[in-house]
Length: 151
Image (cartoon, rainbow, N blue to C red; front, side):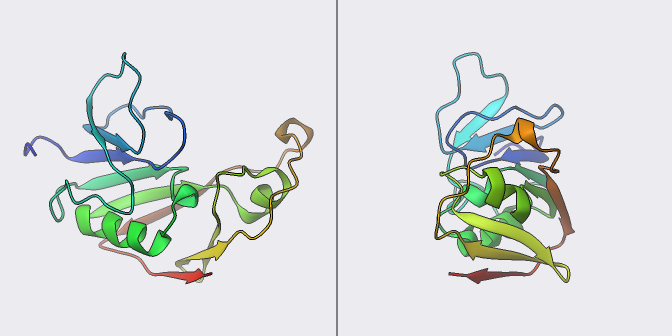
């Protein structure tokens, strides 16, 4: 990879997400639309072996971590490839009320670490328009972070 790449926008979703301005490279598990602008690598969060250790100064994972099959591997990979970053995900309350079937995990922040709880039942599917529930939790980290997975 070029030394000019500093910021990665990484995801692991089922559809092409909105691209964040100001990022040097994008990754996801799907093929990008034909009008995709920017450098793009197809890979899952659980296996980003195409990137070197600490290749990125910052990684953004916007609503991707809850889609992963193995959050332990995904978290380890994010820490391996980046010096710092932010993970954004739906709060547990929102996931219970109107979460998506392709979300595999409830994610929350517990005493400064991420907590992943395996979803065992579908969410209620209440339309989001009927509530004013906050849909985004941001977890920023630098140098690494701790997490726990409950299967």
